Amino acid sequence: MKTVVITGSARGLGYEMALRFRRKDYNVVLSDLNEENLEKAKAQLLLESGQGSVVSTLCNVVSYSDLEGLMAFALENFGSVDIWINNAGVNQPDKPVYELSEKEISLMIDVDLKGAVYGSKIAYAQMKKQGFGQIYSIDGYGSNDAMMMGLTLYGTSKRGLTYFMKALAKESDTMKDNIQVGRLSPGIMITDFLVNANNDSTKIDLPEKTKKVYNILGDYPDVIADFLVEKMVNNSKSGVCFEWLTNGKAFVRFLTAGFNKRDFFK
Ligand SMILES: NC(=O)c1ccc[n+]([C@@H]2O[C@H](COP(=O)([O-])OP(=O)(O)OC[C@H]3O[C@@H](n4cnc5c(N)ncnc54)[C@H](O)[C@@H]3O)[C@@H](O)[C@H]2O)c1
Image (cartoon, rainbow, N blue to C red):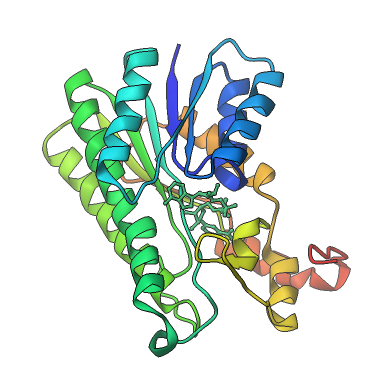
């Protein structure tokens, strides 16, 4: 039986991916820093049928030792890890850089970039020992160099993470390790993330114009998780990016926007 570990999987995309792995009979290791949501997520997954087991543990991805503990916990339970997903992320308060506090800047870099770098390093070391595995991180705004006021630090972290994942895939190719390193690009997901920053402590008041764009381009995370999990379980290549919102799809969404009656923010 295969095993997947997902950081930040108590809700949102992480949870939806965990659910799909469960339905595919994987052993699922849930982890998050929000204990209440983590317990709920585990209970919810156990209601679903699946041949694998579901276990959960607290893990703050800012902490290297927490991530080492997460890997140790997965190994104690299941002996090896087939897929490791660095999913945990935080959004930026809608402010220009000069208004961000030191704490706000650190949080984005520590969670969105450093947490995924730490997670990838720990997963890679274990997968090298066991001789196989896949590691994924999540792209986000800025991964393709896009820029927007209010997302500079988030974009900086995601841009850095994209570079890191590409370079790590290259390392894996060079060393001929049987480890596939890739990226998941979910586009715009209608999750709590869109309206909360700083680990939920700061509300983001989305302008009407932005809501309009999100209504056209956005999707709930369950639909996106369907697509991403199917891609991961069938993947054998390194350096891949599984992209939900392609340019072609975005173009069609804008073309048909007049017929689009979706309003996620009602
Ligand atoms: N929502 C979007 O539109 C969007 C778009 C592109 C990329 N992403 C990325 O997708 C990923 C998931 O986003 P989501 O929309 O599901 O967000 P979400 O806010 O719904 O879920 C994120 C989860 O991560 C957890 N988390 C936050 N900080 C953590 C930490 N330090 N350690 C462990 N867990 C932590 C939260 O408790 C939460 O359960 C993130 O990496 C995000 O940057 C989101």
